[in-house]
Length: 414
Image 1 (cartoon, helix red, strand yellow):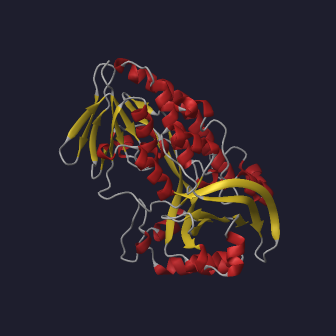
Image 2 (tube, rainbow, N blue to C red):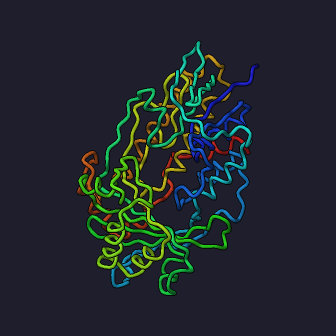
Image 3 (cartoon, rainbow, N blue to C red):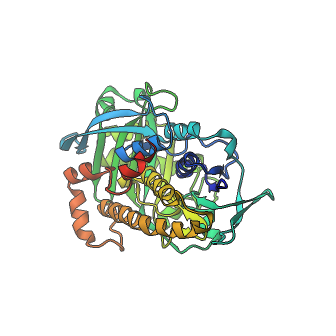
């Protein structure tokens, strides 16, 4: 039987989950990443779940005790420091770069290619293989193409796949600060706790993560959701050089007046630990929040996974876990499939995972209702009230959602 060939577009988390799983299933897999340099330092904190750990094991990733920081409680506080809600909750919190390193080590480095921008795709069919053309003039044909190139997916645009992206009506301000830079009072609050505060139109949280080089270095990852209309968003995405960065503004281009504004607002609205963190952080990142849904996760011999298919707001903490679940499901549907039957198997994969993606997006809209009620959310007033209750907010944020990853799939390689 000939060895089946897979091309993975996108060398980040989703792409490496798929690449490792297919490689372990006997495929000849090559990953093509458009970035010219190694992916590092992108993203910040990642909340782990049992399903994510199962998926890492299935990928052959050798996860050790340096994965992240283990916490045991969640806490919501008022501006004056009063405890509004608290619960015991054990969880390991890691960083994007650390998780990516585990996945990259598990994959053959010679099959990972940088500076490969896709310009066209022929998706193929039962009789014809898929073909991918790159900006440098090279091309490659494969039995399978995995589109794992994120929210702004080039593959999705080229193939004109029916998708729906909607601005959620708010942004996330993100910052990471070394715990040692904070006052002793703030270290006590943020050093071993998943910490929350919120007001109408505002929701802020922070949790400790391992540093990029050592789990002994503890960083604090902060995310602040703020209601922001589209006119204000346009201003926020316009840099100090006058350039409008519609697809996301580089941190160094953000106008200083906007940074000053959020620091001052944190002083006014929340407990002092939040403003202290924002002033001590090395940089502050702006992330507009979108819902992104796709109508089919396949086209011919092309499968869409991770954020190229569905993007659920960060409240649910499912981005990486959902990508892992997509990759596991894809691998399961392709096991033992004849080359000519791959498009049929992809349709079965798509049907199964569409339900998961829609569920994650809906749950994230529910959790975001205290910031802005989505017009697509059923019974938005109920969810606004429900997640305005601090005990509900801290219990449901970034917990494992049923069906995103199943242990049976992840155990297939054990």
